[in-house]
Each structure stands twice: as C-alpha cells, then as structure tokens.
Image (cartoon, rainbow, N blue to C red; front, side, top):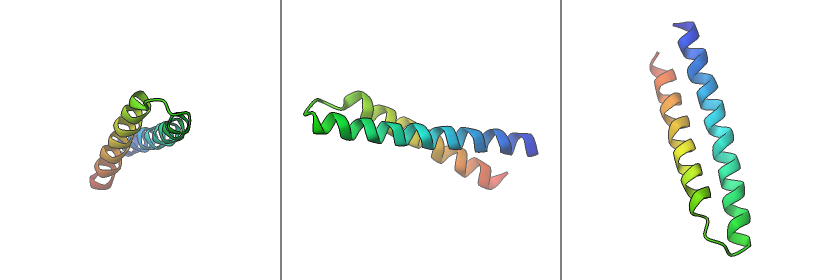
Length: 60
C-alpha cells in the first residue's frame, strides 16, 4: 500500500509540473498571438491527471 501511495504521489508531482509548463507555454503563445491549442491541451490533461492522482492518494 505504501508503494502505491508513493507512485501516486510521483504521478501527482509530475502532473503538476507538466501543468505548470503547459501554463507557461500557453502564456508565451498567447503573448506571441499564436493559437495555444497544444499548450491548452497539455495543461488540461496534466492537471486532470494530477487531480485524479491526488484524489486516489487521499482515499488509499
């Protein structure tokens, strides 16, 4: 059980870091007036993964 929680914590940290990178790239693309479709998708997917890992870790 402890190993599973550590894996979920690692997934959460990686998801949060990917969401931060996605948000920064989204901001840069918006400032350059380019469509930030890829950055938006990266941000939403990584934030969803981090949220799911956090919820699963809370219940285990």
